[in-house]
View 1 (spheres, one colour):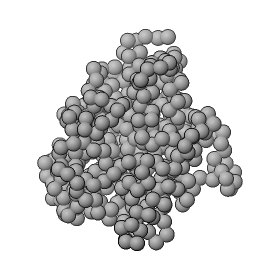
View 2 (cartoon, one colour):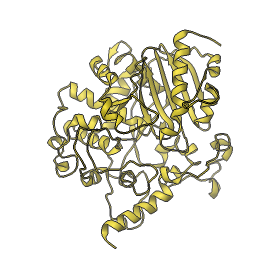
View 3 (cartoon, rainbow, N blue to C red):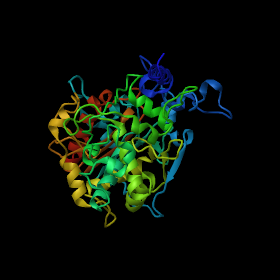
View 4 (cartoon, helix red, strand yellow):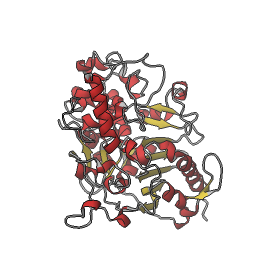
Length: 440
């Protein structure tokens, strides 16, 4: 057997047992039956063997264990602290509205209407917070997640990294039209070699990299092994760090023509940031975003075996601090009387990217959307835009309704196409209810 076929076989074996996109059951437990408290995960000293969740066997990424592990990921994999602001944190005034659970909407595709409360259960929510004009009007936690729990953000992390890179572009530290290989010569012979920073930010690079979450042989599985997110099989000969993996990604096609979502793009941007600043993205997210905006609790960022942060999906924050980031963006980069992110950057992101390039990706639940600087842009009448992560992580900013929604979830299906038909109409219904001032 050739070396390439051996690598593919090993990756497939790991993915089938440990990678979350391949490990879910054909008919997963419903939200009530899979509640992590009810299931008794990690209770006892030590917990019974059949109630343990461990990373060494990939159990931390297997549903229904994920309903516990997503709120404990920083304890199960190597991570580094992402410091918050010195006390006191920025204020989030609270004016909870009990009536909002009764907000109703019709899911995509029609059918029976649902309430907001039903949507929380149907999407396996771990936590949900809604801000209206900077006030907390709705806040719920489920399972083992609390207001003090840092939860894995997965690809919502990308939007923090994209915003950080835009700040460095505004500072003149990075040239968005420069090739990645100008900053990281190690990528010159890879598919990234002749791609620009802008193309990488907007994910219009032409790479031979598959992000197919249901394919155990996909390149995203190899990246997961390299980053340490899943265990490597014995004698695995492939890359063991993110920076060792990225030069192996080949080119396929022409850069700048179509949008294709690939986590490797964000990891490459993380390497660029580290090279040009001498700092890693975890430290800079703390210094440029979390601390200035007044985050109330330290976050954590997963790292690979070399200590490099997982830029594509490693950030862990509390729900309130994720909502603060959304509020920062809603207020055009201002928080606590300070301009933290230049207003022109927020406007640039909110304006969106190339809708034609995005349409080529054929996202059934996102017609008319685009992608800009690691953010998803709706182009709807409210100017809403999102940060999105697998299994239902979300940050939704609606400027017209003056609303921010942050959600943690542990949906058994990785791709957001599984929850979008409920989530997106629910978000818009909440925006309409808040914007109209309607109470039920």
